[in-house]
Length: 212
Image: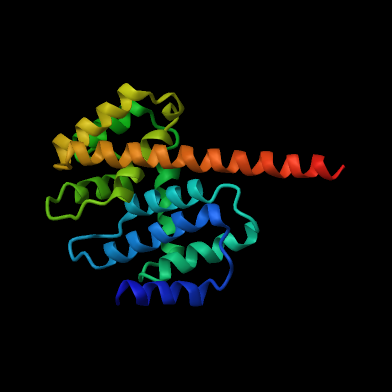
């Protein structure tokens, strides 16, 4: 399949108008999934699933009509050969496994390539250590989401984030510069879309006042 094929499949599955604030994000995610589906060394594992589900939730915040979100997610996944049901389920199960653990425990599991971790996460981290695996931005975001979803994850700070990047770089062979770039870009884009949503809310309120 070419990118044109993936886009055609997406728009056939989701024949609705996408609000402008979400259109660029949707297109970028569509292209990203298409490219990943063509990487022979890429494995759509549970950590990738956590990252994809997180990115979708984050960048569709405030989307209307809300009832279109399930079909939008399904169309994005299926247009590049991914199973939306499996992605949602794997993401849910991984996050459920670690919600009562601490940041320190997850750090230790990461450093030891999954040793001591719950079975599902342990297996995923062990597989992630395979140097033949293809790195993806969504995997990095999935790992950060796992980090943030622990019982003490809400207290994560820049120092903890840098410790995570260092561990991933040293233990899994990921490029430190690329990790920093991908995670910082994710945070920046998330901030931009939140600002855009706030401006939209203000514009709607102002329009209502003008009509009074």
